[in-house]
Amino acid sequence: MSQLNFFMLADDEHEFVEFLRSPEDTHILPGRFFTSPTPAPVRVLPAVSRLREVTLLNATLVPTSRWVARGEGRYAGKYVFDSLRAPSIEFSRSRMKKGVLLPGRIYAKIGWLEPKVDNRVFRSWYSAIERWLKKSYVKHDGLWWFGPEARAWSLAGGRVAYGDDPSRARIGGLGRAKRSS
Image (cartoon, rainbow, N blue to C red; front, side):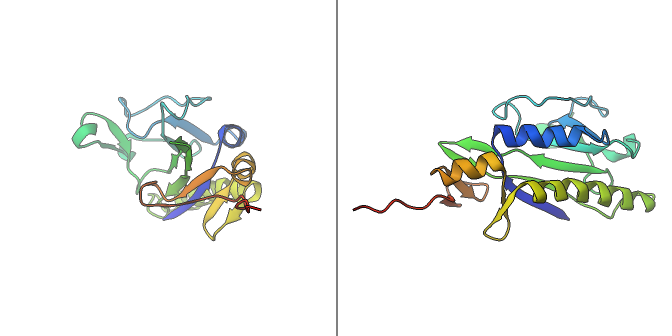
């Protein structure tokens, strides 16, 4: 399992998506569950308020139906890429909730592909995406990465949730508390 947690605002995400599109080895799929086993990639993501989850699929490893599983419960009748057998990355987008920026992340299970040689391509692809984020973002508190816009916003007093659920997460930011005189 590999994952990276980050905070992005609109400009940060736009630059990230531009990076994903540049080598043309990534299909950007809107959502995690699909009405078709072969969803169409997009070039632009809708507003985060309309779409929180994105699937990144390695375009050099030819997608096949054996990578697709059926959703269950409220996702019955939908298709999802098998996280163990598909060269896919879950991309959860950062978003605002009541003035607090919630974290996003990229997440993948690497090492389970067949044929085994595909794992090397998958790992290299995931690592290139992770490397870009780490070179472009600033690390804070050991495991949180801030995009340039999110960092400037937080330094100016913007609040972030260090965890997915703001009711249980530590709320803070990068800005210094103002002292009263």
